[in-house]
Length: 581
Image 1 (cartoon, rainbow, N blue to C red):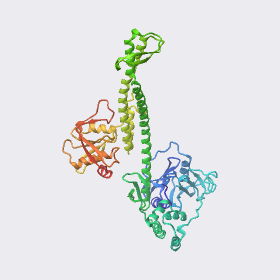
Image 2: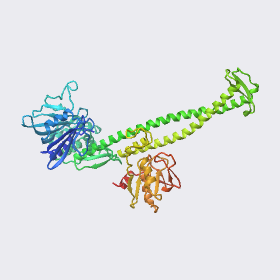
Image 3: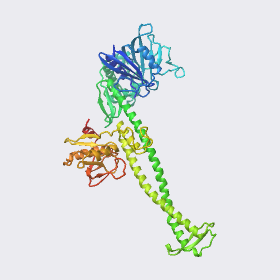
Image 4: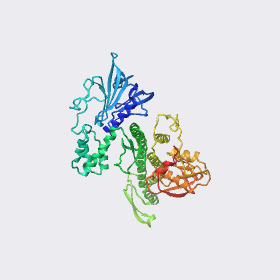
């Protein structure tokens, strides 16, 4: 989402309070769209991020870490030349516009102290970061805009900086209270309140317009009162920054400087201490999710590539089995020819003989007229033996390939459940060790031996209501480590029935497990499985001593017996409360 004019105004106010008078220490440009200023103000160190990325443009103090290019870009060098060591005079937002101006006092080539401006315009695809001198002339910009891109406003070195063209809408900050409310005496359909607000007023964003419409119930006059209250809170700097998350998850969906109600119960809310904290957490979560998706997609491609290869093999061997269905016919041909060699003559294309396998019913056998009847019989025996061998090999291969497919589909399901970069890295390493992927850390002579083998991370830990420790693996390597090495043979082991998921172990070491603890452990097993969204989940449990890994089985693949079953209804919030932080 793009930050609206109100959010940027709130951000600018908070940043101005913290950074005014601070000194710029270092300047970095991490990418084509983002710069970072490190400052010291009032005895504190700060990291000010400015981003003109089309989808995540923002300005905020951040605790995130970034990788810097080996060679700083030209724009970064210019910022260092004009801003490094400078004193930050102010951070201001342009009223009704998505523009923030950072004014810095620094020394020029003639040792004169002059103000420079670093201007952020987070306007979606038109976003930019612009550096101007004391005369408001553009020194440079991250994105140059000439007349071929915009006839109304060019952004090029040497030109004077101009604000974007003003829209023909009402500036609420220039209205008296009477003038403001007189506008809301007009008639407006209940379902068009938000549209009219956006059409009429400068600085009105979709999220604020929808919120006013929602709170007013579509009453345009009441919408004016609600809007006026919002404006009053903005001028008084009374903010209630709120993050919205997808229900039951930590996936960020939206944010605003006030609590909003238009989404009802579809999202979870989380209040923040400041607008800056709210913005930084939101985009940090979005960036973490993006990186996670990229890594997951990368490993997923490996799994899908191998599955596609195996599916093709399945098709080949199934065709072989279909072809081998004729093998007995070739044997019968060979046996009948051999039994009747004494009465057969050469140079015939076919011969009809009594089939003693079917009460001497006549059977026509095709022949190769260029060879003798005995040679034809031998040829049919050879074809029979070839098809018989092919059938045996194909059946064995099908069993092996289906086992591999089951394993890789299990890996794919666990990958879909992964919400941690380390866990995804372990799944990638598991695939490399299994020969399903290549890695530069592996020697060419020994694909199964890694030079710097990554240590398997610890399983997740949970505490049951009675304090019993419950462990949960997140991938096949963790599952195997937990079940076969960490767990005691008298601990209780759980797994969702016939569904890919985590191994869960109750560390009771032979002591009786309460029904409540067993139920909570089953909830954990259900939550970290492909059945997490089902209404009812069957979870099987047994002692660890009854869980075995078959010889030659893939990581995490086990068999078990002497088990019982418990039915649970997945409860993500209860599982989250049990997890040890």
